[in-house]
Image (cartoon, rainbow, N blue to C red; front, side, top):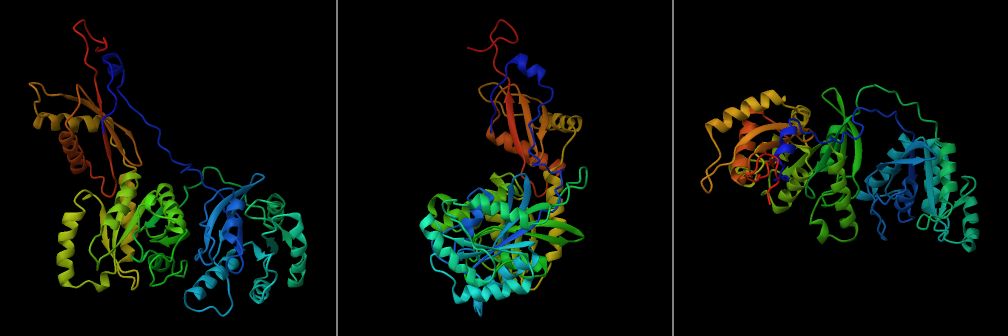
Length: 476
């Protein structure tokens, strides 16, 4: 990457170069927000309602039942009050297999919530599943707001009145799709939720944000459940179980981390469609919001083009990177030999990535993740003093000057670190540098200062050519 040229006058004044670092209030902790769980049987419009409550299209929605499978939290704000909305999969009694795991996630969301919104399809009326759900909700002893969804006009409000029979009090008719009566519902929700505690200024920073990414069925949800020591995410041998990003606070090695389990990336975003398209967007957003990404690869399978795309997305987002080779318990000596060759060939462009070999199923070596994450984050936030950086750079360019091109060679005058997260460096030169020499400087920078587990950016600021009349005269 080559930055615009500077005139002599501009260049002489640039002894320091700073870029804003977006810390996203990294040092500003927030008090825990009260939690609202949104539950109901499949296809009653829970995710559409969640999007309406949080004021943005974030939960994945499609006109088929069963799109949401895990319990997925989202930040919401209404009338100056913060709260967390937890979207859940469709709850059904006596569910089997994956449906049972989805129902268990919904029940776990209710258990941890301060209040519950129970969504019923007013156009269908109360069903046996709804009545079974009411019994389950009564056992939870949580405040419940009964929502009659899909009441798109006044003529349908009479349909909502029949839901008094569920015994949960007054049904509140709304249209999650069109927003009808959603403001009144939000007022009811605030009345049901406890007031959040005040924000404590000057406290410790919040948990480090970690995105779990990888292609489908490499074991992301299994790893999250292993780290959390409970079933936080639905796991199935069928690829693509996770659709929405799933946030979980996980304690590892004496520290709390915020993990986000993401949908497996099958295709390029512009080639995906429907649920897969929106899941891809959510995954990309989760990577952008994270500080470090754990990319899971299946150590028993060849490193694929999909794996490469996932790795590229993390590097291009500028996030710290740990590569976890999962299912290591299934790898024999022959596979290890070929895997070493694949790593050397397929991962040669990111030799700086930290690698760990784990098994989410058995728990093998998962304790190595926390130290690896800390090393990657320390590199991601490392700053080299300007004096030390230039002392090293002077010795480097004297030992290996830029190749002569057309009878002349540009000189590297000095450098500064423009920012962190990821580390960004600017080289000030008398002319453009060859791409190969720029890569050489980057490689030597890593050899000297480390930056294990973090991408770094090296750009060039070249001095403009001046006319024969003297310094500061613009060329041309």
